[in-house]
Length: 325
Image (cartoon, rainbow, N blue to C red; front, side, top):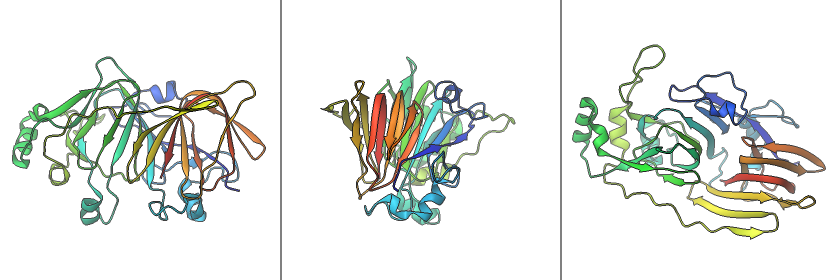
């Protein structure tokens, strides 16, 4: 039976994190700070695990290894889950960093994937911002010198952010999430990050985190970046649900679903044979039913839906991200 699989994440206690993922998303992870939760992941650095059902406590990686048909027939799916989905709580600024392209990663990181990603802003402090590329063309030599003398921030393009904003971060783009941002991140299944600058801060042991300047400069786009603009988004309505496309690229598609059903009304759908789907609940609560079973679904829950799935019924007041490979 190709039934939905509720997932339990792995958490990360990076020094810039806060407590909102435990406080507001009820993650219940014994970490302080709790910077990230890897909600849907087969990556060995942070796997997610099934909760309940026939696969209870198994890693999603092992489930998909045993059932590769759950990924679908789309060429991008291949034999491994192509996406990694996270919640990110930035109490402090993240490091300024860059992720490699597929080509660079294949050549320099033992054939690993690159990392293109998308951010959906769940909440943002009044003055929250992010770094998105450079504000002018810069040579590698100039940027290297500015990192050494602590003046690199003058070359970074900063952008204010607000709740419900969407940002597409193509591999090679220098970037950073700023303090006060709560983010849902959809990315390629990769953990390749080259840290360019970290504000000279130290970790809990009094040590500076390592930088990866050579690789970062080799992988980065050093041309001026256009200022990111919010994409045109069109809500399409059907009884009990509105849907809009947030992002489409060669690695993933992301939709936002707003479910608001009346007492006896339900929204039904299934994953087609081409691709799996992942439902990430970013607001509200309700129920998810299939094959005669009904499960509660709350803000923070993540559900993997195998390709060619059983019919699924949603009921309640829910805001979901619907991710496809």
